[in-house]
Length: 345
Image (cartoon, rainbow, N blue to C red; front, side, top):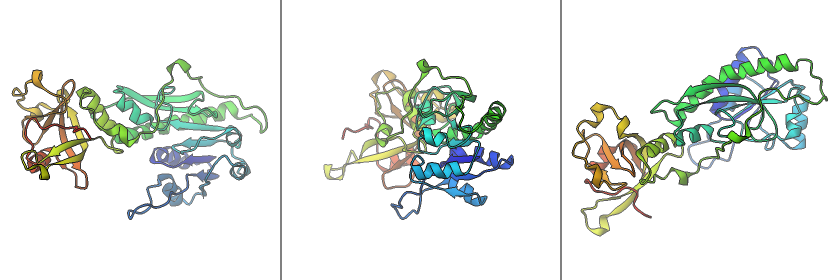
């Protein structure tokens, strides 16, 4: 068996495969990118996992060039298991294993094909999601579905938390898919046309999940409180939702600054606990302006008006500073009700 993966989503399923006693001929991962900061190399969970268990590890620049395909063929593996790898396998690469490849994907396909399925489900305000294991074809996330599992999205769950939970849910789905392919393709011979296993995807239900961009993380305060709540959760842990605010409004113009702040934690007012919101009767909903700082009790919470409703900000991080309570930031910069968030650039 060949395992292909890079990020953390793959590790629980790969470990289950190893623990079950399957022979792992090769672990394929992405090459380490150049180090651009003093913080050292970025995390490489699959690489670390393979090294921990002394498994053969390989990181070709392209999995689809002739030398890479030759290396895959030489393993004489029955199956490739692909998850969170980062490259699309072309037909010759998929044909390098006797049964082709299966891929664990973090959505209920055909919804959210692409690089950011978990984040896009949160950004869309979905109430449920899941995982799918497909028998791979050259089309991105387009193969027939071998197994799947569904789960509810929790009300305060971030994309990082949901992704970790889905990676655990994916273990059983992956192991079941391996068993199904073993049963259905046990007699398949090298060189014969490979029959695809699983239920074809409904093309009418396809949606895309492109990679997130930093620009998408800027809060549009004219959106509803629900949409902004979903944005804040969906952009965690990267790239993190952000906005701008004009600080020191009561000081001379030379002291005024427009600060960029990352919103680390926020909640739609309707969803906040009653002991967190206390008495908000002094908020006049009829006069609210989107992005306007409102008076909100108790004082360790900060409320901001949206296009429809109110967002309670709990924690934020000013550019170049440490993360802090939102109320600490408001007090430190002497911001008062009426201060506008989302200052035009």
